[in-house]
Amino acid sequence: MDALCGSKFWDSNLSVHTDSPDLTPCFQNSLLAWAPCFYLWAALPGYLLYREYHCGGYIVLSRLSRLKTVSGVLLWCVSWADLFYSFHGLVHGGAPAPIFFVTPLVVGITMLLATLLIQYDRLRGVQSSGVLIIFWFLCVVCAIVPFRSRILLAMAKGKISDPFRFTTFYIYFALVLFALILSCFREKPPFFSPRNVSPNPCPELSAGFLSRLCFWWFTKMAILGYRRPLEEQDLWSLKEEDCSQNVVRGLLEAWKKLQKTAVRHQTAASSGKRVSGEDEMLLGGRRRPQQPSFLWALLVTFRSSLLISICLKVAQDLLSFVNPQLLSILISFISNRTAPTWWGFLVAGLMFACSMMQTLILQQFYHFVFAKALKLRLAIIGVIYRKALVISNSAKRESPVGEIVNLMSTDAQRFMDLAPFLNLVVSVPLQIILAMYFLWQNLGPSILAGVALMVLLIPLNGAVAMKMRAFQAEQMKFKDSRIKLMSEILAGIKVLKLYAWEPSFLEKVEGIREDELRLLRKSAYLQAISTFTWVCTPVLVTLTTLGVYVSVDPNNVLDAEKAFVSVSLFNILKIPLNMLPQLISSLIQTSVSLKRIQHFLSQDELDPQCVERKTITP
Image 1 (cartoon, rainbow, N blue to C red):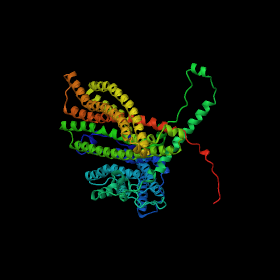
Image 2: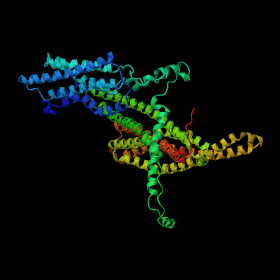
Image 3: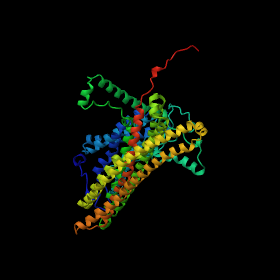
Image 4: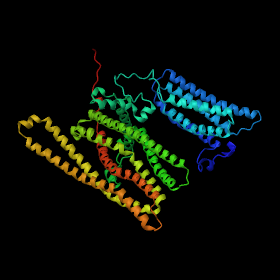
């Protein structure tokens, strides 16, 4: 990099160990100028792929769109002016560094790409582009350092050493700041978008990027609910992608496809060589035909949602480990009286920015996950309902109305309850591994005592989980029988009243309910034991680790830096350990519901060819 710039790329005395920090000209002209360009080119493939499947119509060329395009073209012209100026100096005997050719070329091509993306978004009906807002924001942030450096350099020398590049840079800074302000405003609704017949559409559809990021589109509803109780006509209509006909169709198509695949496999297996009964017994029996997996149908239908939620949660988890490291740096800064003052302000600002980013990502994650959980429940209920309309009479005897109602109410709700915790399957191991790694760096091998304590508690919670799963399966059987009995009672209430059979049937219902309550009581005791164990685990791990650290070696002193950083890391570790029992409980309940739903959806259906359809004259 030094050869590319013709000067030093990094100078610690200039950038770190000084009361007036600054970056080298090489760093400013290379990495600082290229960072927004790298971001835009990296985000381009995924953004184009997303927009290929999400077209909102066509936006007419408005005044705002013209201003955005003009600012992009002017930025492209400014970059090429810098490039031609370098060639002019080379022709007239100068020797500009290669960086003065590379940076204007890279920035110029990127500005041309941003200008094309402005028009592409307009043609695809995008009212506010988050990719471009982040790009212009990065351009402004990365230009702040050269903005200050050039002014300080001119004031120190008493003159401007390179007036042309000085002028073009400040024109560039003004244009990117103007482009950032323009990108914060959203365009008009698309002209050829699908017509929305709802009188009260959801404002999230037309909200800009910043409005979605901060949930500003929800403000009017919150104010209205504060002033008076909300009524039905106050609620917004559903988005097109959240309507049942679209949600159920996707899951139903995936399930039908898996059923057809299973039928083909069964047909291929049945066409093979048959064996006699004695041979089949001697060979241990033939392999049962594989049933279609409803879980796989759910994963296929909601795979993109699951992937996005995992990415958001992993990003939030990684950011949560930044603040303990910054806290360690801040405590070291306070202990070092010779350190420059701006170090403390910089670390405090980074901690604030990190906390803000973590909060924004976490709230977007919660909003996304709970919305998708509702869609998951809706899809499952729709598939069960459609199946209930076409099952055969023998299947109806095996799965009565009470069980079907239970599947659509209780079992579908289990999946919705699990959805917010499902990302913990990836998040919990990641957080535990990272916390252990940083604690090992801070406290050394003493952390193994805490790890050993957690490992010892795993068999206990495993046994509790297996017992809870057995109780859950038995409880659902009692619930099905109770609902079936109540349906029969309500259907034959006249006969029941006529013969005065109320006390006997009441005893039957109460007996089933008592068995149900007995299992619920046992499950509650086991859940309390599991929750108590995992809630106490972080405290016990902290005490064990710090106690072993202090007692193992007399030279191990628990100073402020190690104590505060370790406690902050243990607090991060406490969150996944506290959520783990809820995840285990939800997984147990959902696994039972999954088997019940899959068994019901695999029942025989009525033959559609049994009905004779004749064309009659009007």
